[in-house]
Length: 475
Image (cartoon, rainbow, N blue to C red):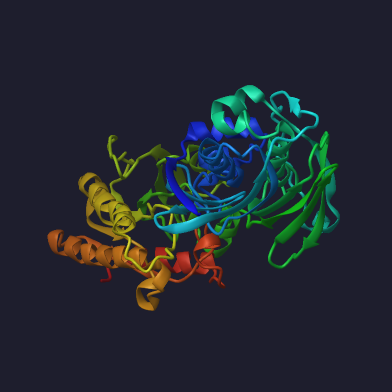
């Protein structure tokens, strides 16, 4: 008779830190919120194996006869981000169990387990795994990459995080599971990796001390990778992806090469959300053209200061200053430049993600609105008193408004609402001009996951936008 049971959990940053210590997988995608926001998922991703071990811990609490693994298979069709509410459902029949983990109704993990009775064998090495640098295997070396890792973990941390599983599963099996995420996230591919699927089989009484791995499949076009895993009593594989690296915007020197030295000298610009992406490039173009820019950031202080240093070291006539400003809170005032603002560029955005459900996600739509309408409105309320009477507001929309891709309907709906808000701004402030271009697909941190299609040239598109915004005398 099949039994079905359900649990829920929202993974926290503390969960991430503890699991990183337990597994030895300290990949920035999982534990560094500032670095993770520039990667393909836009935020800290819960380790796939954290999802698996939590699921197994729930199973161990439920099934007294679960004392060892014979085989485990898992796949991860989507990422779980820190803070997401995950729902786990186990279906159990005899010595077989199948689980599905969902977030907002969408599957993020499938797990199949064949379990058995208690086994004999040597224990794993019970010690906390040292923090080591995250390796970065070059793409041209992936095909021949191989190595091994120790089967080790801290039993104290395991007892704390997995109280049911730690006392039930043979330590060598838990160590092997944890080793797979350490291999993928820290060794191969390492820094630029996404864990995709797992298949492990265990023989009774394994006394392995290391888990060997080697690349058995490598597709340089897609980045898809399969690693063969082996040790005495353990065999299997793990599938992963060599993920896209963060999108670097053109440098200040590249911007200076396409801009006339005084092209934007009359611009005194506020660039909201300018520490990276299109905001970063806009700041470079204006500074290269002799304008002064105040760049705001919500969390990317290092990126903003790096941008200011790059502009400062280039000896362009314009200047970049930076300050923190969270459009969702607006606890700080908008800072002033020496001259009143002539232009206000608004690039603040949350992570853009596509849905798989056919239902309209009202919460996601409201999240977009909080940035594109409510946040923009707060910025204007604070910035317009510091601006010239004929200031220009630049609020980028998207070509998606015309194309209407089904997966991004909440994003499109929010952008349409934002365009309507822009029209209302022009009515409420007759002297203010609002430019709301529907930008084409451009290379940014968002487009790595948003739309894997050909993008247009960032420099030419954004230069044209800055030039259009700079024509203050024209409607």
